[in-house]
Length: 546
View 1 (cartoon, rainbow, N blue to C red):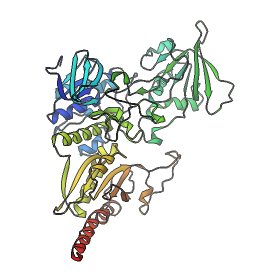
View 2 (view 1 turned 45 degrees about the horizontal axis):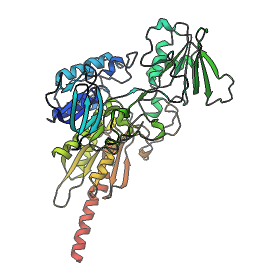
View 3 (view 1 turned 180 degrees about the horizontal axis):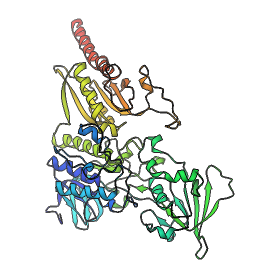
């Protein structure tokens, strides 16, 4: 699309990466008026440049042993979702476990071609404000557009740590522009600022070419296998650690860089001053290098776009977010800005480092849920739900099916849940709701008797994943550490009254009659059905007394 025919849309989407495209697919399928705006010449432009060395760390496991489409998506981290009977999946493009960014870009271009999404490209967003009608006004290089709802799907831009003197020197390289010509680094001493995936991606690319690579950041390395957060260091990126521990010149430093100086003409022109966190008295705190490369991650907040008097966007104040993310509500709305939502990687702000919300395999579900909620609120379209016979067998059967197939709850653990609502007086069927934010459900169903199913991990404290001795047993399923289903019963005030953990299973299958099926039935019987029946009996008794 070169230029839209009209100035107003119900939904404006800023950004045409995976999040913007996913939102556009959902909105188009629902027949809703929308416009997706992006400064590049097509969808997925981020992947034209990042990751710089092209290999993705998102799993693309095509073969799962299951024929269930939803289950397969648990292990397909790149596909976008649609309501089609035969959707276009990323696993159809490549069977490589760790594919390339070029594969993902090609996939997204095919998605755009197939769905013919309403996108305005080669269009820079310059300013965002609100008019007197409360509509968003997005001023672009191709005119201004208004909308009732605004989805910010802008993704991240490389972040610069503010406290390093000398980082602004023109000789310092950055992840987004450092040369990929290995010959420039032959036999050089290189310092990489950062210990995240982009830093290790860069270090591994250069490790066979340079003389020395040092990597530095204040914190020690956090491994994804320990934290369960896929944004922490992944095993596929950590070959350099092997070389470090086997004393092959490369090294990992724990500390801060207080100053970077550049002395042209010297053998090793960079002089870097460190303050080491684990060895503060170390006299070896000034080190010489040939190159310095900053790989410090991404920032997801650009306040310069907004009229802050009318759109009071703010940074999340939590120290661990370092001012890089916007402050949003549990339903992904910008704090204090009705109808404006963060979608894509910014959605991880709700439960930072707790699930996959910052990545395609997580936010594709969060976006679907968000749009479902808005469709109910504004268009009267009911949330996805089904009626169930109000019996332990019927409700347990549905819960167990979802435990063994749902990808949304599996990836968005600790956040999205399924809800079972007991029938009200005069009703005979329970209502089963799919994939709602737990905090949203507490408010929506206040005053009702209900239960929830959610996935979550247990805690093993500071013990390494491969050293922890499992404690969970059939008698103590609450000791489960691996991802497992949890049932929660709520009272009418939204407080949890009872909790039931199902025993972890190495193949993530919850089908055992004794360990899984009967405990689910019993929980439903005790904390939903019997509770309602007791209430009804008490009500009848009170009426007789009166």
